[in-house]
Length: 89
Image 1 (cartoon, rainbow, N blue to C red):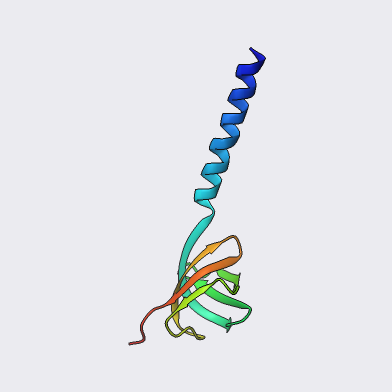
Image 2: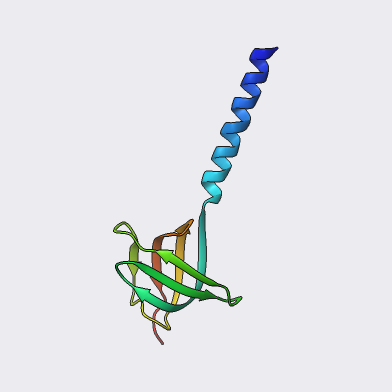
């Protein structure tokens, strides 16, 4: 009985961890309010909420990112994985 209980607890932990791993990456779009290519990007989303994300050497940047540009950012926590600027009209 104790063995089955340990197995059940272990399986629950694995399922919770896998679910967390998939939910950790978020996509957000908005307008750049501040940008330092070596450090961070700050942006305001469509609902007016401000987000500031860390840029690392692994962050992929596509397009011309600058203040006022419309961007889509893929992030995990506060670290940006990719930043894609929309083409200017």
